[in-house]
Image (spheres, rainbow, N blue to C red):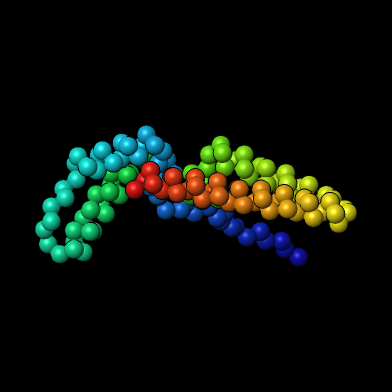
Length: 141
């Protein structure tokens, strides 16, 4: 009996598409980007609307690549909330503590009280998230 070992190629991980690093859009970078776009862009009203739109969009993308940078591709496993702030973190932590207290209780009376406190904490956390995202998007636009 003859044993033959077949050669095989090791698959290399494919790289993703290089993307503009929009997650680097902090307050300082947003200011730089808006100044660059306002000062250097050609905002002439010439031609049809689609051509003007495409030209402006290309210039904004090009400026964003220069100010924010470009990724090498790959990754994408991390999901982060760029608008996340300390107030949101505190509210979510309070909600998590309230949920842990709710799930650890055994009596029905205690469960009712803790469920009410969890619902309140959940509403406050949801409101804090909504306010933070609205503020973040207001800074962008």
